[in-house]
Amino acid sequence: MPSALSTPNIALIKYWGNRDEALRLPKADSLSITLDSPRVEATVEPSGAFTIESFDAAGMRQPQSKQSIDRLMNHWRLSREYAHSINAELPSSVSVVIRSGVPQAIGIASSAAVFSCLAEAYAALASRPLTRQEVSIIARLGSGSAARSVLGGFVALKNVKSDAFDGAVAQQIADEKHWLLHDIVIVPSREEKKVGSTEGHAMAATSPLFDARIKAIPNRMEECTDAIRTKDFEKLQRVSEEDALEMHRVMETQSPPLHYLNDETHRLLKEIESLRRNQHIEALYTMDAGPTVHVICTEEARKAIEEFAEAQKGCVIFKTKIGAGSRQL
Ligand code: PMV
Image 1 (cartoon, rainbow, N blue to C red):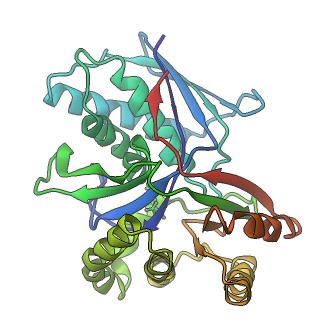
Image 2 (cartoon, protein in one colour):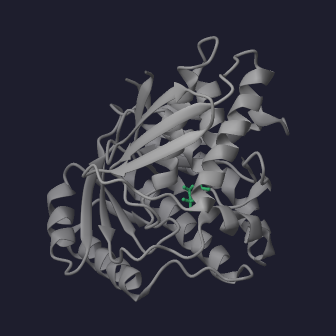
């Protein structure tokens, strides 16, 4: 039975807002670091009807909401349509078993890991081998950011001139051996968020700040790519933090507003800024759709950041680093 594994990624230039909601074609490009953990594994098998079973890291069965089942079924339907359009037929239906070490809905990209893993597993059922870009398109049809977890290292999701399935694809900027960066993830609250990113993207353009942000992204993509290629941490920090804070200002001013960051997040950001100032540490922060703070740092800074993270009372910590992306097992 085909199996695959994948991991989350953390965006430095964030994806927020689509030009096509159904196909999850982003309004602007984005850029992330693929992480090496936590892992998601999926096993798929052709079957008479679409079924899904899900287990957590401890092997406990995870009940799936109707919304989640509908999203997975819709992704399978789109994956088949896309596969058909590129002469790589998929079976009529499939049974899926997911084992996930990624806690859901707290801002560590569980959907990115799950949909890139499914894309990889579905690819193993196709009537011909798929390219990495084709696998990234299948991942994107479930979650835009998932397209980036298909490749390792530093990965951009780039728009191309097409309004069809292939209108945005993942491209590797540099592989995972280029620059050893860590992501020390500090989770201040395990309360599941009420509004997920799928609904959030759809309302992004209602923010008065949205258009200016979309215009600013091409320059930021260039700066971020350059900072990665030249390993200029200070530049990476400036452009990534600017972009993360701006995405949250868009979220907070769209209607209805989305307030993903809480008081704990803001306290952590202030403390990271003063730690960095006082100890000249190479560390930057970024936050996705949740209060979780990702502290990206160099190998030299890792110990100090881990100590800082471990000293945060009531927070759950994940220690991850740059990884190789999804693959078939
Ligand atoms: O892939 P989605 O639909 O879950 O959107 C993710 C959006 C952010 O995580 C907030 C930013 C990003 O680029 O990952």
